[in-house]
Amino acid sequence: MANTQCKEVNLTKRVQTSKGLRYCPVVLSANGRVKPDLVIINGQQERHPEGAYYLEWRENGRRVRLSVGKDPADASARRQRKESELNAVNNGVAVLPEKGDNGHRSLAAAVTEYLEETTLAKKPKTLAAYTTALTYFTESCPKLFLEDIERKDLLKFCAFLRDDKEQAPRSCWNKFANVMSFLKANGIRGLVKKNDWPRYTEEEPEIYEQDELDKLLAACDEEERLWYEFFLMTGMREQEVMYTYWSDVNLAHATVRVSHKPDRGWTPKADKEREIPIPAKLAKNLKAWKAKADKTCGLVFPTAGCKPKLDFLDCLKGVAESAKLDEGNFWLHKFRATFATRCLWAGVDLRTVQQWLGHSDMESTMRYLKPSRSQHVRDKVNEIFA
Image (cartoon, rainbow, N blue to C red; front, side, top):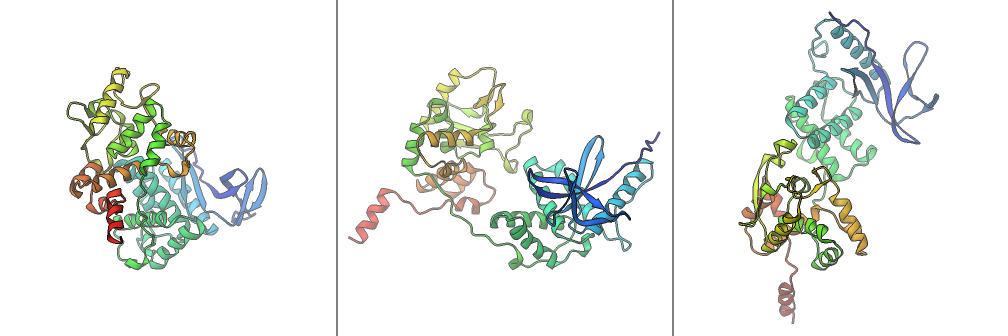
């Protein structure tokens, strides 16, 4: 028997309040129209021109939110349409996908469908990135239908990211790329030219100098030293270190594997497993650590309850501070950059370093081809200009 209880869709606006960003009820006039920019905060009407409108409703006891742009009249119409759709479904009436009279596809419906597919096929981090990018796009784009999107909407989106959202140049590029992937998946191509994309300067990867590492490691206790030597000497990403099992470590052959962990729902980036050789020094320290480790836990670096360690970065900042170093100069990926650069300086070929790093393309590895700053090179320079 169908549940005929009426479903309600609320209209809110996401605005900046004294307590941060909040979803606030809109103010309606006597005839039910939305009063532009007016919201209710703590029972009082306030004017907030910033922010976008959102629909809110509940499905299976879970709250669902959908951005519907900045136009109040359009947002109100979308609310009525969504409420009618939900109540039709609630009463057993089949509802076709939201389209215009000319058969055009709803932008909001396409975004929802795309994110649902992303939920099934991608990792949570990827889903979060697409969700943010498409939320920003629907805030900036006034178009209701996919087929109405044109070049100027994407150019406005670039400006919206830069000016309204104050995104860094690389973040603008990433979010623009995610929106372009969404449009491509819906058969929309060729709207922008190469020069229309946001631009950013590819920053040279920073690496640790030896004196920095010496001071940092001197301030570590035994466990902390092993953590950061492991990052430095394997070049592994943070999550790869978090999910390293003792079964991945081959002490006899001095290697460590990055492998799929189905029991923890974790997969390596790009679904690629790999093996990395480790120096004898690290293998020796791991062997000593394993002898003292909890035999019931497979993780190399667990926390209480055999859970992955989530605060490597916080601990790194703490060690840097105790060593009287500038903690702003210390982050985890810098170990990876140092590993890659040192391998290339030592003459390891690009293809091998690419494999060790788990890069899907050579270009990513080539970023670490930095000029050597060794004493040998300095001596050569002095010799040239002696």
